[in-house]
Image 1 (spheres, rainbow, N blue to C red):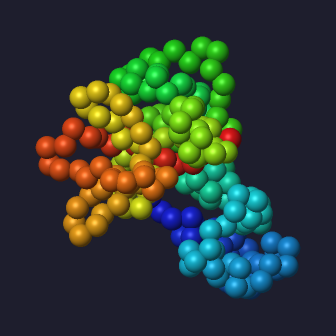
Image 2 (cartoon, helix red, strand yellow):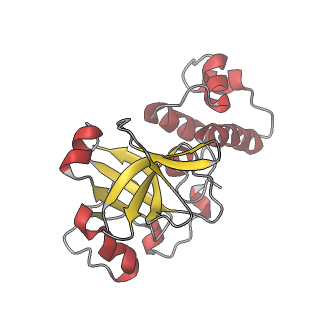
Length: 216
C-alpha cells in the first residue's frame, strides 16, 4: 500500500534523528529548514496541509533522504540504497503519446523509445510510463499536460486517488477519481462531470494504473 507524503515526511525527520544520534523535534526541524514554525511541520506530518514541491526539496536536503522518494515515493529512501547496476528502474521514463499506451502496456520492455523525450522524474518501476494528455484532458487539467502512471500494486487502496481506466470493449481511456460510496466503487470525472462510471462485477472498465504526478 502506498505511503502518504505526510508519513514520509515524519520518517525523514526520524531518519535525521538516527543520523545525528538524538531526537529531532518538529520545532527543531522547522528551524533547520529556514525558520519554519513547528505548526508548519506538524501540519505536513499530520496531512492537514500538503507540502509543496519546494518545501519537500528543503526537507529532503536537511534530512538526507532522496527527493524522489520523499515527494513521489519513487525508489529507495536513501541514495546509498540504489544499486550501481543501471536498469530501466532507474531511468526517467520516456514520454509516450496517448495512442501508444496500449502498445506500451502489452510489452513495456520491448517498446521502442527511440527519439522520445524523458520525464524529469526518476521512477523505480519498470511498468511506469509518462504520457501526453490528449487535448481535451490537457484543457481540463490546465496547465497540466503530462501524467506519470504507476502500475497498481496488489491490494493497493485506490480510494480518493486519480487513476487511468480503460474500456475493455473500445479501448477508450480516461483519467478518473476512484471513489467508494456506500460500498459501490465509482470512477468520477476530475472535472466533476456526472454521472460517474459505477463499477459492477461484470464491468467492462479496467484500472490501468494510478496517477503518480501530473505536470506541465
